[in-house]
Image (cartoon, rainbow over all chains, first blue to last red; front, side):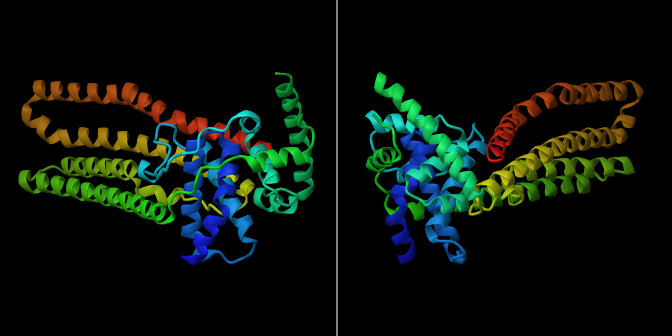
Length: 158
Length: 198
C-alpha cells in the first residue's frame, strides 16, 4: 500500500501529461490516467523489477492510451463513475494548448513517443516502452520535432 | 518562437495537470466496478439455469412422444444457451490483454483479440439462428401432425415465414450493427500497427 501511494504521488502528473498529449481532452485524459493507476495497483504484486518501475508504469499508461482505439465507441467511455472524478483542471490555454493540440494530431504511436521524450525519458527507455529499437526511436523523435517546430512557426505567424 | 528541443520540453513541463484524485476513493471505486462486473456474470448464469429448468419443465409436463420433438427442444435450448453466453460477459476471459507489455506487442495483441472477437461474433450468431430455426421446425412436427394437414401446413408456413424474415432481414441488420464498430477498430488498429513498422 505504501509502495503504491508513493508511486501514485510521484507519477500521477507525468502519466496525466502523457494522456493529455495523446488525447488532448482533460476529462478523457483524467479517466485514462485513473485507469492506468488502477492497473498499476492490480499488477504491482506481480511486478518483478525486470525494468525500472517508471518504464513499467509508462508501458501501462501508453497501452491504456492505445487501448482507446479498440474501445467500443457506443459504450460509456469510462467504467469509473463520476464520483471519483474530482474537479478537472481547466482546459490549458495559449502555447501549451497549442502544443497538446499539435501532438494529438500526430499518428497515435508518435504521440506516445514524443510525450515520453518531452517527459524526459531517456531514448533507451522509450525504446523499451514502445518496443522498437533505440535507433528507430531517435529517427522518429527527430522527425516529430521537425513537424512540431513547423507547426509552431504557423502559431507564431497567427 | 519555438525552435529547439529545450523550449518544447520546458513548455511541456510547465503544463498544469489535473489534481490526483484521492487514492483510497479511486481504489474503492475500482473495486466496486469489479464487483458489478462479477454480479452481471452471476445474473447471466442464473438466467441460463432458469431457461434450462423451464424447458425441462415443458418436457416433463407435456411428455413429447416423438424423437424429433425432443431433438428440437435440445436445439432450442442450445441456441438460447449460446445467446446468453455471448451476450453476458462470460467470454471475457478470452479477450483479456496483458497491459504491461511493450506498446508494439500490445498493439499486435489488441488486433489479434479484436479479430478473434469478430470471428466469434459471426460464428455465434450463425449458430444461434441455425439451431433456433431447425430446433423449432423439428419441435413442431409432432404438434403439426396432430393439427391435420391443412392447419399443419399453415403452422409451418407461418413459422418458416418468420424464420426467413429473421434470417434474411433481422440477422444481417444485427450483424451490421454489431460488427461495424468492431471492424472500424480493427481497421484503425491495423493502421496503428503499421506506424511502428515504418
